[in-house]
Length: 336
Ligand SMILES: NC(=O)c1ccc[n+]([C@@H]2O[C@H](COP(=O)([O-])OP(=O)(O)OC[C@H]3O[C@@H](n4cnc5c(N)ncnc54)[C@H](OP(=O)(O)O)[C@@H]3O)[C@@H](O)[C@H]2O)c1
Image (cartoon, rainbow, N blue to C red; front, side, top):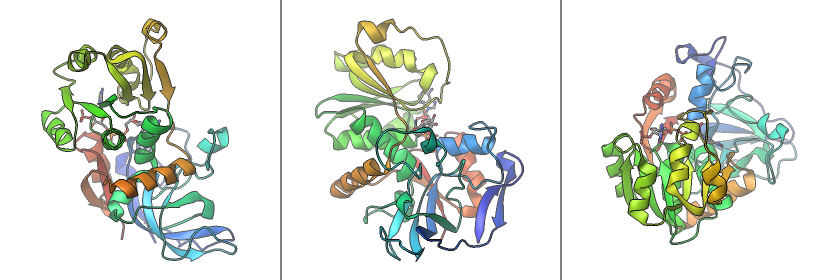
């Protein structure tokens, strides 16, 4: 079978289309014929050797994907042959809080990921995907979709009529826009591109701010809302947190997800305590919340925004496209 792997060294130029032997279904495990995958920013960092420089190689990158169940090991009961399922990001995180073991069971590093024609997993490590989605759309759910869902629902506790600010127009952020609308919130989207902001408006954004032209966008949100926003979806991290703290209303929340604008900086904590702001870290999510998200996606016929699809043998081009910030929402990789 074909896989995309990093064999001996990190780097986009070292991604290789290689042959490996097909896995068989061991007891309690299943084999998926992978249909599509979808890269996240984390996968780009992993390939560049910046996510975990100590990650042993070879590695098949990418955590997100969707596949069809081809074979069942002895005793498997959760799925049947032919089911279309998505692997869960952290293979042993079924419910509750994450543990150190949770982080050791994530796909696309340290475990081999989804850029492969066949993938063997524990039967507990998958969920059924919504039937109305294409393979490419369904492939985007495990990390990007679920992170946005948990940032808004589980941790963000968004109520109808609230205002959510979403930073940028990448994978997590456009899911967050879509889920916030589904929850009855109004959404402000920031972006470095006016063209992407137009696309965000077409998806239902209430207001938009170009963060390049308006670096003090925290204050701008007060002009728009009169009271600050209720929740910020923070993907910029240390480099944007000061603006997020300025944007949020007293008693508001920040779901801290990413660090596109840096992981470390000096932060003035006084607004957090004086305005009683809750800053909550978000780590993807467990299988139970993945299933809850899929029910909502199915009921509301929500469709993930996939702006471009690449074939498996153009994975490098897909990651370069992501690194250049050319995408809107998600990129997908067609495998079959
Ligand atoms: N904690 C978790 O569990 C978790 C899960 C998933 C992702 N993440 C993290 O979340 C972040 C986003 O991931 P992703 O996969 O959605 O990335 P992505 O699809 O590559 O999104 C990148 C987009 O973010 C926007 N952006 C970049 N720098 C920005 C800044 N300084 N301020 C505002 N927006 C900025 C840009 O949007 P415009 O082009 O519109 O400007 C860019 O196109 C990454 O740091 C990732 O590692 C964390």
